Length: 232
Ligand code: C5P
Image (spheres, protein in one colour):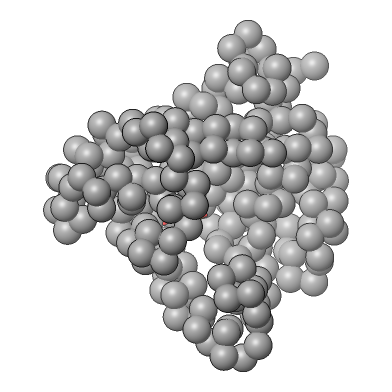
């Protein structure tokens, strides 16, 4: 069988990480969380550079010793030999990540690294994890910039209300009115900042939209698997 590349984009709270991971696991594919790379870059910049100086940020990220794991069952993020999978989900990183991600030199560098991982996992001879079966890569600009040539391209959307509810459950363990309110500002501000450099609210030509607002997790995974079956 020929290797397959599946690209999935979406805003925060769309469920794209958990859905992409499940799709990769069920199809025996590798999995790349590109948001985790921007988050790791943010940790590295906070530790070794000046967040307010774009040249310092770009230089730091180009030299960043990052190793991404691509096993959907345990996608590791190793920065300078340290496991930072938990650190990158922290509030401070989430607050600063859009600033690092808006640096165009940072984007060029991470795009190059993402392309390398995608090419490797979709090469019949070089693939490490998937044995040449391919990869699911998810983020904000995978369907449009990183892998516009992917076999399957999906934009995973959800209503603002559904996204805030999910994010709130994730961060506060609750989705009552006050927990949702506490999440709202941060989620909407990050979406607004991200939308300045990436386009993930409307589907580009040839990209299939899956709206998960009224679907539960399993139904969303099934909807994506249906698109994959139709297009491969
Ligand atoms: O998906 P996640 O919320 O972990 O992404 C973290 C941040 O990384 C986003 O808010 C965005 O700033 C950046 N990002 C990006 N392009 C991608 C993936 C993530 O700019 N392909």
